Every structure is written in structure tokens, then in C-alpha cells.
Length: 340
Image (tube, rainbow, N blue to C red):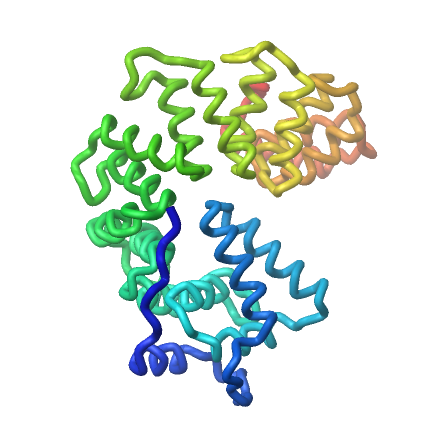
């Protein structure tokens, strides 16, 4: 269910927004009509947000649109900051501050602008304001206030429902209650929220708040999460395929899901892809490709051992004893042993 943006900005809200503009923005004439580019990108933002797309994916889509249309990011930020007609457009401005699109990333202004829209009953902004309180984005961590704003958002917004699940699961801002957590996770998942779907899958896999573990249901919800571009859901779906958990074992599909997540920048899944190439799991064994993926995942602790071993033996890379020793020392410092 989509939030209804009914309230127009009051004069005091407009003043608040104006005071948040960066000094680098120069005055421009104010047209009566909202610029076409603002309308189009606001529609994209609304559609993707109300479809519960990941913020990273939304940011990529916005940047690509601006690049394809030869519009500078700061030019668009300038236009949007002068086209504040609805609470959702204010939420969009906060999103730009949060992601550093057209303006320097600014946590304090992210919080302030989301607060304006949240107080005007925008469910997305209410969820994001709860997120700010939960993680201390532009403000101090306050689980009670986070829970309060997630409750408001959850009336109409699935991601807010999912965050209520997180609060109940961890006992943040409310007494810990796994049954309540599962209820809210499932409500969010069934409405299309990717993280809600992942958590429901986790609960089914572990047998939390359900009669018995149900691996088939776990896979079904991991798939919902994965298809929404959730990296964690993609990893667990890949894992289930490679191990034959809740689904017929299919190492090729397992590899494919690991790679989808790896291509989105997941260091741990980049490591998993490297392991697949090293051992020939779901793909032809190829130590050079394994080395490539291990190097992409160089900040993941398990990688230190394997990449160090590759440089020591010259497997898939040019032998480099000094580099091998540095990596193996890192592996030892992290107390990593080969488990994969």
C-alpha cells in the first residue's frame, strides 16, 4: 500500500528546506511548473521506493538517468531543492543528501530533511527517520524513537513493517518477541519487502517462531529476497542450491546466484565465486579466475589465506613470496584457518 502524499508544504517547511541548501547552489528563477526532469526522476524514485527496491539500486538508477540525459548531478539537486511541492519530494531531497547525489553526503541534513517529510505523514520518510535513529545517522542512536517512527511507517509501508520485525527480534525499543518479529517480517515480505523476505527465510531455516524448520519455505523466501536484488538473499539462495538444502542440489545455479551478488559488490560473495572457480563448483575450474575474484574480495578475512597461498605457489598469479607472506600474516592475525 502506497503512502498518500496529501499535504503540501507550509511556508515554514519551505523556509526549513531553503536553509538546508548548500552554499554552492546559486539562485535560479522559480518556474510555476515543476521541471520535467524533476517530475520524471521523482516518478522513478516513487515507483522504486514503493516497490521496496534497495537504496543502492535506486541511487544507481538516478545517476544513470542523469548521465544518459547529460545533466549534471548538482544541477539536478539545485532544481529539486526549488521544487518542493509534496512530502515525497522532500524525502527525495533527503535521499540525495544521504547518497551524495549532486551534493556532498551529509548525515545531519539527511536526518533534518527526512524529519520534515516524516512530520508531514510520508510513510517512506517515517521509515527512514526511524532508520536514522536506529543507526545514529545525523543524530544519536535512540531505539525508542526508532521504534516509534517504524510503527508510524508500518501502517502503510512494508519496509517499516520489516523494521518492526527487526526491533522485536533484537529487543530494540520494545521487549524481545520472536513471534511478533516473525509476524511483522512476514507481513513485510508478503507486501514485497526484500529484507522482510530474507528474515522470514531465516526464521523458517532455523525454526524460529515456527513449529519446525522448513527448508523449502526458507528457499521460497530467499528467492523472493534474491529477486529483489538483496545480496544476502542471493547468497543464501546460492548456498541452498550448492548444498541441496530445501531444493534439488544444483551447483551451477548456486554459482550463478553467488556471482549475481558478487557483481553487485558483495565481498563475501566475491570470495565465494573465487572458491567456486578454485574448486570447480558449478563452473569449470580456473585458478586464474579464482585469483581475480579473490583479489576483488581482498578485504574479506578468508581471502587472505587463499590468496596468500596462490602467491606462494604461483597458482593463477605470478609467484610473489613477499606478497604471499604479507597475506598469510594477515590470515594468521585474523586467526583464519581454511574452512572452505
